Image 1 (cartoon, rainbow, N blue to C red):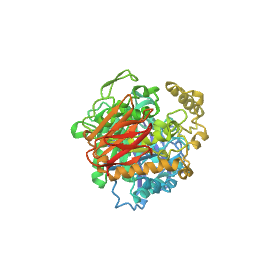
Image 2: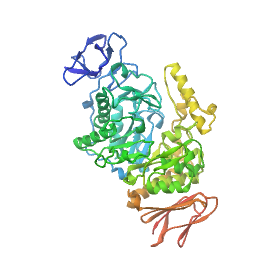
Image 3: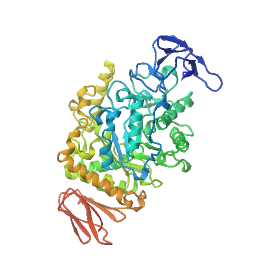
Image 4: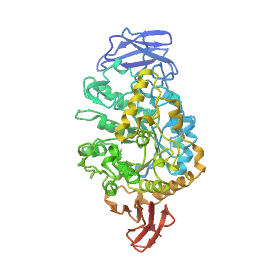
Length: 582
């Protein structure tokens, strides 16, 4: 006989609906405050069920539902995680210091938009040199299409993508090909549609506010079980689905004044889980504060995450390549800022930020380059543009190759966004599928208002609710064999091979990175051991000095006119050269 349990301290009465039957639940005693349970033979794998709170006859999904086959408003389904036959017992995740990440959105990665269809494209990632596949959030969210950051059933893989079994098949297939899997999770808010958690307990608090409304209750009354909810969720993905790590969304919006911050608890429990299951697990944070504590070890007073997304690196690289200066890009645009982030991690490590109108950040002297993830684009930096512009829509092929070289051969753990490697022509737009008309209208109107800070015309913003907005965002895999896409893909493969071949390119010690630059001529040279990466963003050919301590040759160049001349490399405008021993 199996048991259903639910934490519902707000309820006076609880019942479980299984089929057409309503079965009363009983309160648990002792320290299990607020927990209700029921044991009955009807609780079997594949059975659908829901909960009834007090006298309300509306069935509600289980807050810890493992599967929502009918969407966020429907019944939950019982899943037996022991039933799946794994074949990855011998898989060992690649070291994060050697990683090349590849971020995808399951719904747009393939035409079918499912976990199973993604399996068919894994060989492409292996040939590219990718080591870690990073999935944008897959927890159940409203409707059939969306980014996943408005999930409400955090334990349930999205039913449109294929549900629990299909996600396990994808992870198992990745491991069979040597690829680790990282999952993006959202622990700072819940989506607006299908969010019934407050009917059960104090999951949210009005003591803090986030950009999405009420904050998650991590330090108020009843917060022990709320913290347990999220830590159990993290463990479930890594234990039950064999996920190799998590990327935690916007940790700056996880508000907690407890002596032991939630992030520290999450990192500690992840470390303990890794020891129990004998697997390498990683935690990556998105953090807007430039706070080195996030990726500092717990023993040294930090939160214990393995890495953070380095937005200063992205913004520095993006602005010197595009010359954009709107919105938060107003703080960037100088070659010296790109040079600083390559050598020190953050640009803003205590300096005054014009965009924020305050001093921002703290020095990252305690961190390794491996504590940073660097990219030229990601889902946010593409999808949060009015037209979903990729950098391939903004830059020439020559400048794209410069950006790729800095990301792939720079000191940080590189991350690519789906289609970047072949300069995909398709946009990646913001799309939703909210079923409530009022909510749908509010989301569409709000999206247009957001773009005013960047000077984009709101009327040019595609409607997030339109199905065409989603369909246009799907990758066109037929482009791979066409120019200029084929040549760009070969460039990325060549850079990945160089990173794998030359140990100094995977050295995480930022003290071993030497960067020189000329702001007026707009060139930069980065020395990493025996390798020099030289770029020219100026409007004419220039000579970039490099250390000539032994015979050198050009290992890779984006322009046939690049020439070595004694202590200088002559670079035409918009070109990059990778120079190393013969």
